[in-house]
Length: 416
Image (cartoon, rainbow, N blue to C red; front, top):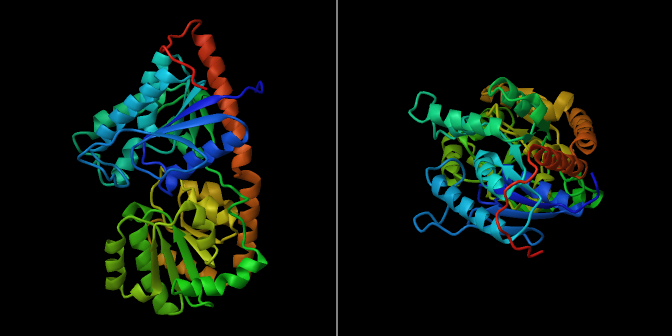
């Protein structure tokens, strides 16, 4: 890198910031880049939570959908059209060096407007568009729209010059399933702020009992923690079924289930399974408070079923030194390595068995927690990853300059 300050326009086709998943990756990338001295502007949907340290620009609202739910929706077409219009408006008024486009919708907008503005585009790939829609039960493989959407996804993947992937499994998917050139792919696994997500201090351990009791958890009970979205593809249903089996063996076990949406549905499911008195639902937890709540647990769980999406929550667990049980998926193996405890994917019985075994072995919990913390600090720290992102930007800039001697420019006014 030549030491210059880069002006980065991030396109985030989601209701940023919403305390989960891809939002956390966008947030931590932007903050890490800013710590290196670069300027980041994020253009996103109308809804979402503003953060004081980020330059966030929002679209106009659509009157028939003021509240946007998590996941796929037909209303995203209107949201993305407004996002494209807002991005164009920003490019007309300000100068940038590179477009960093998140998700396929962001990449499509970036490709169109980046060509008009004469800017290189870096695509932040966090999973297959069509596979995510299937996971969210918005699309069927035998449905009318599957083939055209798959073709659009493939075209986007092949059109972007450089792609960042949130895992090496995502890199494999792009190469094997979409036929992408490996030379255009730069794996950048999800990372974690290891200073914020750190094991509890002695003072925090001393306060843990009182903090637990405020939530309705006995001070000395074995506690499993989960923080993330609540949905079938996240394994929430299977986790509650596993709790039913665990409570038959050990009635002293509790589950601190943190996240959204579908709270009422899952409370009802817990009632039906007879575990409502052993599952504490908190609802949405602000990202800033995530470490405090997760430190209340003895064991973390990640029952995500998706084979294509990332699993950033694993890194938060790791950085906190929490021994973790996950369904056996490529991404879980990539992050946890030899120090994860793996249940058979889709089996509530296997999940219950692994959780029970870990809760009964305090020495194993301490050993795994220590190793996972070390792994997170050495391999998955955002401060190191930010330098890799900047290197990719410089490669994109160099490649774009070589490909055209006089790129087209949207007439702009520098307001920096």
